[in-house]
Structure formats: C-alpha cells, structure tokens
Image (cartoon, rainbow, N blue to C red; front, side, top):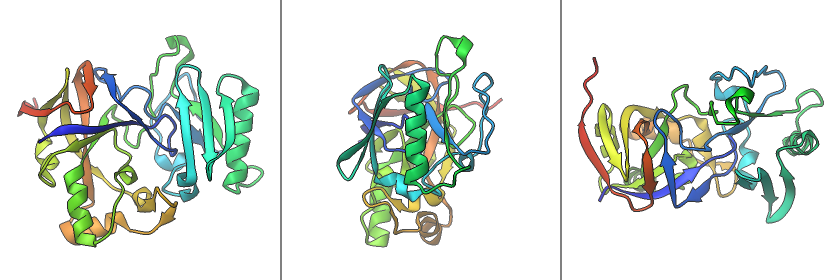
Length: 265
C-alpha cells in the first residue's frame, strides 16, 4: 500500500496541526512552516539572529502543559493571522506582525496556563532578520532538520494491544503513511525513500515522550504511551525521522517507494 494518507504542519510548537493537501519539501529543511514559532519560557534567552536548538522543556509544550490540547488553532503563513478557539469560541484573533498583538497573545497564554507574573512566555520565531525572512530554524524536538513520519498501521496494532482508540495526532508527525504492515517503518532506517517528486533518507527512529500521553480530543493524560510501547514491544519508539535529500512536491495519496541502502562513509 505505502502511500501518504495525511500531511500535517504544526506552525506553532505545542499547538494544533493543520492538514494540507500538498507541499514542496526542500533539501536539508524541515517541512515548510513546521514549528516556525514557539512560546519560550520566561527564563529562556533566545537570540533570533543566531537560532540554535534547545530542548522542548524550554518551551510551552504538551509534555508539561496538557491544557494546550484544548485549543484549536489556525495560522495563515502569509498574513500571519493566528486564530485560537476554546470550546468553539474565538479567544484570540491577531496578526503576528505588531508587537502589541504579540503581547496580547503572550498574555493570553500566561493567563490560560495560570503562569506566575514573572513567567510570561515569549513568542519566538525561527527567522534570521538578515535572511530576508526565510525560515532558518525550526523548533523541532531534535536538532536535525528533518521530517517526521508515522505508519498508521503501527498505531492500529498498538490500539489492538491496548483495546483503546489512539488518535494519530498524539504523535504530531508530518507525514502519515498508510502502509499495510505494522512497524515496517523501522526497516526504512538507513534507506532512501521516494515520495512524489521528493527523496528522503530515513536516519533514526522516533523515541516517544510524555507529550503523547495527552489525548488531543480532551486534553487528558489518559494513556502512558511510552510505557505501553515498552511493555508490549521492549522499546519506546514509534515513527521515524527522515532528511530531505531531493527537493520536490509531495501530495496526499503519493506512493512511497523504498529505494536503496545508504552508503554511510
């Protein structure tokens, strides 16, 4: 089977994803617009002119703030308009250009998460000013510029083991693959795969953390996903990371082809 079922971009770290029909993957880059923004914790010093990788604990994220899952967010990358809904009501509608608007958004999260007066988060963006506003950094969970992939059949098998429904959005992956064989994605590590017009090299498995314990439908930590994976399979991994090695358009329903083993020299 091996085809793309969904393509998902997460414009702001920790907030909800957006499904897209197609996108041009760029060589040595993350999925365009993915984790372009984040809310850093008040104590974090972030230099936008020299963006570097920081661990997820430095930012608002589901691993600590499960209430974020209650928010339904939409972001327009062109206008930079951010719309946040809570219980189907719009609570934020601001463009992320003006400092005044950004301040309103930061204040909303401070109040919503009941943070202290000196714990106000700061909205940061993975952009170098001198780089003509091109994305140079993504607030990913790993330092590598990569695309995250999950196999929906692996999730289906885990559901059967647990006897519980598991939303794929728990895993916040970019490419959701309908494979037909659970855990086969681990066999892709060390190989090149082609999707649409793009070619990627799969280089590591994705180790899961406590963020996956949060049910995206009700913001409750209802399943210890890493523990359950380890109990049933003896590891903590689900999904893989891949680097884009050939620029190209990928679309929903594109087939995935496994090409050849990478010669690691």
